Length: 209
Ligand SMILES: [Zn+2]
Image (tube, rainbow, N blue to C red; front, side, top):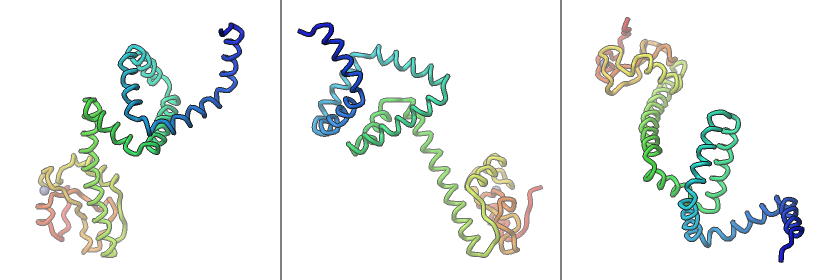
């Protein structure tokens, strides 16, 4: 029988050996997890379902702290990333599966990710355009270069439209003073033009004033 003193003693022992126990648990998990993944996942899922109240409480706690404590949020994010990295090492498909499951089952997450993908594709299209422009300007010994951010700011300033005809389709990078007339490739010599206005302008100096 476990006497109160014995219980006290065990509790104290666990307290004193907390780090050691944690380490032991980690090692055990590392060995045990890959072999019993399916079983464990099933167990976790069941646990979550049976303890929904607990999870809701934790979520509420988390959200209220999130609003108040920026430093803590940063710390938690770091911890999350660390956790992901470790899990991914043990189980290479982990992050991918996690993502797919959430993408399918969490409408908010799904929408966020889809919006992000559109933005990402757009951003990369611009990035490539700027890269190609800078590359060919360098080849033609033009002075200067600009960044995707600068180009995007310029687009924003011009409402993402051609400054001659106003269309939002097929925008291209135009040098106000053409490179062939010794114009530079700095952002202040750049304007967004649609392809058709750009080809009409060809190598003339045209300013929309
Ligand atoms: Zn145009």
